[in-house]
Length: 354
Length: 270
Image (cartoon, rainbow over all chains, first blue to last red; front, side, top):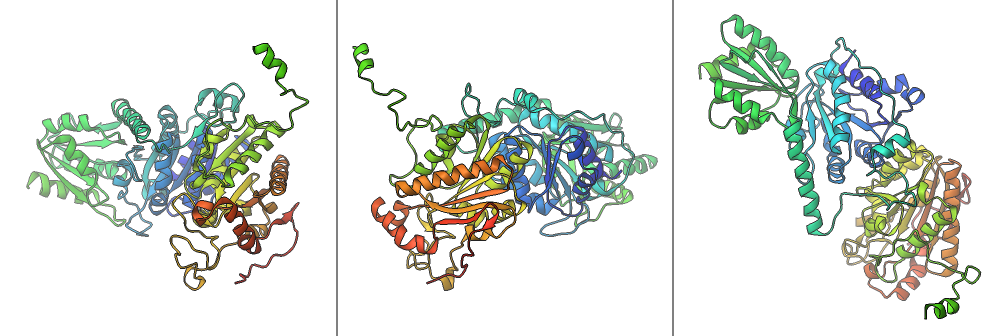
């Protein structure tokens, strides 16, 4: 199935309570799939086409504030429109899953795949000091797996989680091993699991207020300190990455998502030429695998960061590795996907020869 | 001593004609003295108490003067981003169909930045109650021109009066949503006199009774004064409201039981 369909089917199976979205290429199959399979008749999951991305994200805020397991999906320009709502959800500590099937920008850009939304995703994106857990799938299988993982992390940390995919992963067809459906929580289970959620005030508890507002500076600083403590915990416990052929490697490709798949092929081509190169793939872009990159940087002669953007993740790679090793960037953008052999040439020119 | 007081205490059930509702939190309101918000808060909470649905109601507050409404209403509430209350309420009601849901918004929130959310929630026929406080001005930010500021009315961003050639016309949101098939009950009320308060409370009750029957949106506009923003005393502002706001925003039912009561003119009279 397609990556977009896989994430939709996985959301139903993960016990999602509601999807709210707005059509935009290249991710419209997500809502189309949901409307076609009608989970509202089987699991009871609500699916609603909203009037805009702004409305979609605020529907998520409303649903999440009542403890429901909610998701939306969009592509770059639509995700930009959602930034205010994501910031509110981070501030109010609400769980939600947001899928960004990235296309080339800036502006209306192109409908072709890109990784140019890395900064927006990992640095927060909206206003205020906040972070989102960001998972980068490199296959249709991971589109499905990360939907389930995303919901788990969102509720574990009460934070919005983003799947940062791209137009190619969303549109490509691959075999998927789907997990068994998990039943949606009953209202009673939800209330027991989410005592923080607004579900109707019984006589014996105080009323619950879901808000990101605290007009008292001392109070708002406490909110920020609490958020930062949560982010430190996430950085400690939720780093995910994959290392391929790094043990004997003299050089390393660092790439996420689709770029990592291309680099896997580039790695084979380079190794056939006798160049000992490995691949480091950050899976969680936030939290970033800082320590692992730092360790790796001590052992190798150089790193090439391959991204479908003008150089975004390379900043985090350099911050992680320090000045200990040569680190360069190779990127194509605007919807162009780099070919495996051009990546090898870039490695030879920028790192080995440079 | 206490015994004596107990004897003197006339607060017996049969003597009580009015009692403060427990659904209002016992703390000072953040509203200016003379403002209509406090009255609407009270009759809204009284209605929920009388219907016995405190534990089954979720409110959504806006950004504006009533941003802190959740501090005063003793029910579970969510504070929405500016203009987005109907989007929150849509999701809540769809995923909690057995709960009562209402939004509470001002004119800047509902009729300017949130126009799309308002119209689409009404047009989809969501099953919740929308309460719209219209005082023709942005009160909290200091008296700027609102979508409902009257022609020639002064505000801090229309200091020489609203020139409709430059600034456009006030928006009659209530007449507008009444045209949509998803609204079931649309009315415009006020809370500046006891009789108006009673009428508004009746309208609120009707709206929540409608919600019980999943009829679609019940939309209640309350034309209110803003004595601070209008730079008047509360008494002056109520008089001004009667003389100037009511001719443009006439009180009364616009749509009842899904049927338009009368076609209101959408043309501005200057």
